[in-house]
Image (tube, rainbow, N blue to C red):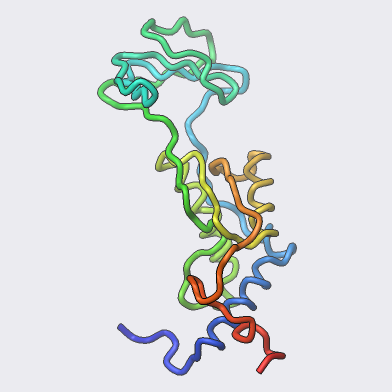
Length: 200
């Protein structure tokens, strides 16, 4: 595998990472790109969505409830029972026979505004922004409804949280810490002189 940084020192790498974090955290960058066009299945406003013939995993009691009807209205589960729905005009019905419905999954350790790239190109910032937004959408598509962000670029993170809360971006509930906490020489081991051009 070819080394992406053949002549790059640790200090140069960390300076590049700090510069890219600053650049991506600028307010005028965070709304430049549109999120991928994905909308989950749902019913018309004010109408119900019924999931019928589903096998519901009850994680609290450790049992599976067979052939259940789940009624969803205004984005919330209204009822779960074994009776067929009394649907009204405009309601939506999805038959989930032989399929399971599970509680939302939780990703307990992630960094949602850090794409994990080994190389940052300022010309690709819009591509990176789209990827960050796509990551939120992918979490929902794969059943992750809550994430615990363990360290992010604050401005960017709060912009994404606002977009999710307004419905402008499909994404999970985000619980986040305030800042990195680290002890000297632990992981990640970053000396201030690695980041600042003003220090020897």
